[in-house]
Length: 122
Image 1: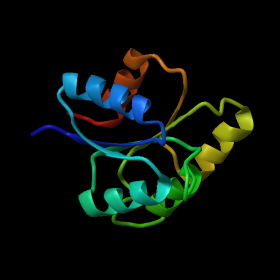
Image 2: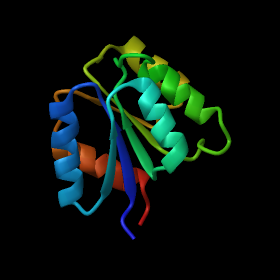
Image 3: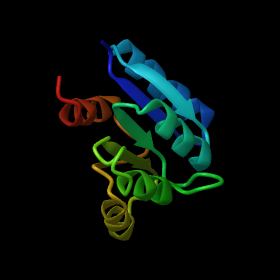
Image 4: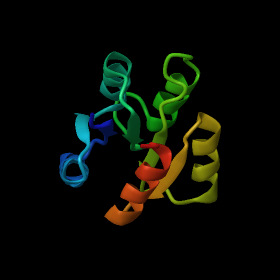
């Protein structure tokens, strides 16, 4: 059964590009375009992994990540923080929120897929 990945980003072109790459690699995909929607879809669908932008409308990615990681039902879902924010302080905040990995945009698709494979054991 294919692993389910939720992609949360407010840029539809990025969401579509990532989903196309993930589907080509055999993953099922869900999408959300703001933090609130991402949190609700994550809670309702329990994806195997979440790719989460940090700069989102309604609720930022740090808060979405933190809320999911503090809830015992979702704490084991790996979260890849996916952002243009490349400063050490941003990475530290991502770690404190519970992010399992941090990928800076613009990104290399092979790096993203490799990180997903590390976080989702077969």
